[in-house]
Length: 209
Ligand SMILES: Cc1cc2nc3c(=O)[nH]c(=O)nc-3n(C[C@H](O)[C@H](O)[C@H](O)COP(=O)(O)O)c2cc1C
Image (cartoon, rainbow, N blue to C red; front, side, top):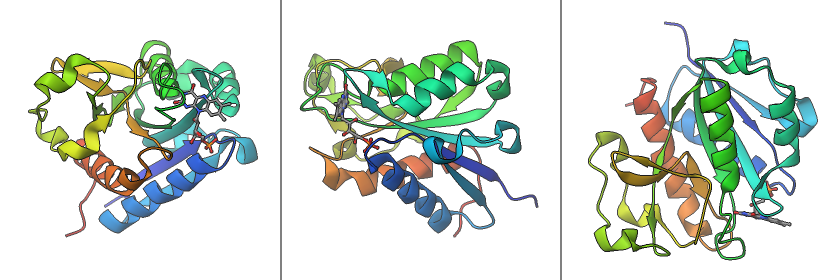
């Protein structure tokens, strides 16, 4: 059987997103046999040749009050949208919900808008949110969909606003995995583990037993 080919592509200014990309790669390798994963740092190697990959995992931190990281801004401008048409894409984003609580992980939202509206890509890996900054926590429940059987504690955040928020089955979700290495660093490993598992399920990648 042909092995699935995944591209993990990220921008980083201070290295945290690079470290996260490596963790995601290791997590996939620990869960799936017979898989090829190539990693691209946009600054070092530029964007990949997208047509070589069926599955794309794209990561960006947020900077300057809600902006995409610089390497991503340039990539978005220079990539013809049809190169990503119908691609299976999942997003992860790094941010800081305490210091930047009005623009928490906004980059996830910017990348999602570009991918969904301009590129017509197929987004997977939405991540449930229980936000203590809104009334959502009064009705906080696990999402029904089997894709989202994620421990409640991993879905807790505390911020005011985020361009990365949307809804799935009338529940609040982020467009992708939101990580915060400052106030929730201790949750990162488990979040990555459950997120990769949900992608393996959504993308029908082979589970190693
Ligand atoms: C100047 C500056 C602006 C930032 N702006 C935001 C922001 O608007 N929203 C957010 O969630 N995080 C923001 N952050 C936090 C970064 O996204 C976070 O530190 C991230 O982990 C950095 O990733 P990197 O090391 O891969 O560059 C900002 C950080 C700095 C230093």
